[in-house]
Amino acid sequence: MNDGTLTRPVISAWKAKPTMEGAGVRLLRAFGNAEALQLDPFLLLDAFHSDNPDDYKSGFPWHPHRGIETITYLLDGEIEHADSLGNKGLITSGDVQWMTAGSGIIHQEMPLGDRKGRMAGFQLWSNLPARGKMMDPRYREVKSAEIPIVKTSDGATIRVIAGEVDGVTGPVKEVVTDPLLLDVSLAPFARATLPAAVDHSCFAYVIEGEAAFDAAQATSGERSGADTLVRFGGGGSIVVTTDARPARFLLVAGRPLEEPVAWAGPIVMNTKDELRTAFRELDEGSFVRHPRA
Image (cartoon, rainbow, N blue to C red; front, side, top):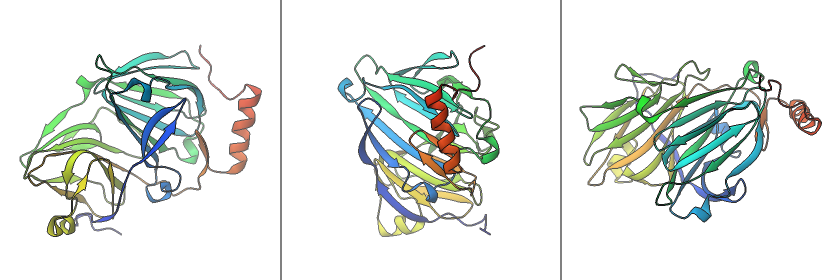
């Protein structure tokens, strides 16, 4: 049992790697299939930031999902989306789309950029437990203005997307993995203590600047810079410090599911038989269980 009074140590850190997905979108993959068991319930984190529309304009044409939730957090630009249930929409800078694929959905996401061609943001995949794999699909679209901002006395400015900071709760609620999703900015020479529920998996992803994410890093002078994923061990809080440079990072935590994972492309189930069923249904045209009304 982890002691909630202890701060979490950094147990590993690595740089995100360039990859290509969709119809030719250039991304940085912070983690995926190979690392997912270390970060249960989270499966994948992709970052994208470019001023060149050729890097992203081909987008993510129609593709299926089942058994997971996809969380898109946009820093710059716009993304148009549509799905097999008849939903259509546009998310812009600062918005979040929390999509629960559940029993199955087919959708597309087409990045548009902003007026200067900039696109930046993240997509995080979170697993669903066996009992929720075949739940009805749903969307939660959260506009930037709905996300509360907490400014702490120790130099942190925090956008609370999910979870709670200093009594302020994010707009995304009633998710089975009880997630924490924070966008944290630290001033230079700050030392901030951030929440992380005991026994939840927890990681940070550095967006810009650099910071020390535990006492060992702070003492040694080691810093984690942009596009670095930092994975934490057990404990009850995170202590982050900056030097002359400010830092901005995502802080993510969630309750592990501790269930078998059978994963092929955009579909994540518990067994290979369930995967075979999903792909057979795709071929037969019966994948979407809840067509538009």
